[in-house]
Length: 359
Image 1 (cartoon, one colour):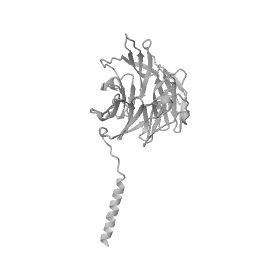
Image 2 (cartoon, helix red, strand yellow; image 1 turned 180 degrees about the horizontal axis):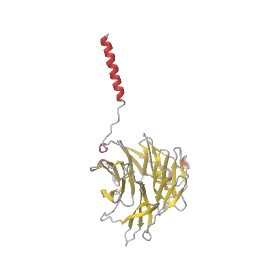
Image 3 (cartoon, helix red, strand yellow; image 1 turned 60 degrees about the vertical axis):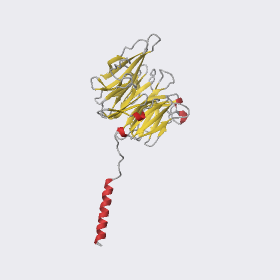
Image 4 (cartoon, rainbow, N blue to C red; image 1 turned 60 degrees about the horizontal axis):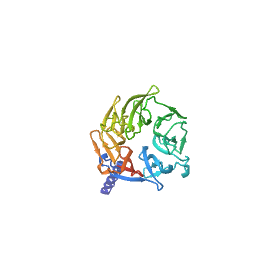
C-alpha cells in the first residue's frame, strides 16, 4: 500500500512539472537558415503587381499595388492565407473605379491609410483611402493634386502623402490640404516626391527627383533632392545629379526611405543602401542591381530587396545573399519582418506577385 501511495505522489509531481512547461514554442531560426514557402497573388483578368506591404503583426498584413482594371489592388494576410480585399464597388466594395494603389502605412489595426492614383494616365489624380477597422472609405484629396507614391502616418491628426508633380498633402484628422516644397528644378523636367518618413528624433525627411527626357543627342538626366521639415517648412538639404558610370550617389536616389524600429533611417535605390547618421548619408551596401526597399527589426537584423531576385540580409557584421532565391525574372519590391519570420513581395515577369515567407 505504501509503495502504491508513493507511486501516485510521484506521478502527480511529474504531471505538474509537465504542465508548468506549457506548449513547446516554435523554433526561432537564424534568418539565414529560414525555410521558405511561397504564395501567388494573381487574377485571371490580368496583372497583379504589389508594391508596398504594412501590418501590425504576422496575422494582419496588407499588400497594395497595381491590379488590372482596379481589381485586386489590395490583399490581406490573416496568418493563414492571402485574400483579395474587394475595394471596388463593381466587386462588392464602396469605391468606384478606376483606381490603383502605390503605398500603405498605418497606426493600428483600425487606422490605416493607402494612397495611389485615380486615373489610368499620368500625372494622374490623387487617390486616398482609409480603414477604420470596419471598411475602406475614400477620402477627398484637394483639387490639382496628382498620383501619390508614398504615405506616412505619425498620428491620427498628422498624416503625410507625396507624389508626382511635387504633390505634397497633409491630413489633420479632418481633411487633406496641400503643402509644398521650394525648389528650383531643370526646365522641362517632371518633378516628383517619392518618399517621406519620420525618425525617432521627431524629424521628418523626404526624397524627390526631377526627370529630364533625353533625345538622340542628349541622354536623359535625373536630379535627386533631399528635404527636411524645419519650422513648419520643408528645407532642401542636398541634391545631386545621377551618374551611373561613377555610381557617385550621395544617397539611394529617388527611391524609398525606410525607418527601422530602432529609429534609424535608410535610403535605397540605384546606388544601394545608405544610412542616415544624423548629419550625412553613409553607404552600407552596394549592388549592381537596383535596390527597392529595406525592412527589418533592428540595425542588426534587416533585409534589402531588389531587381533580378536580389534578397540580402544584414546581421550587424556582414551581408548574406539568398542565392537560392535569385530569379532573373523577379523584382522583389519590399517586405515585412518580425523576430520570427519575414514576408517578401516579388513581381514575376511583370504579371503576377509572389509572396515569399521565411521562418
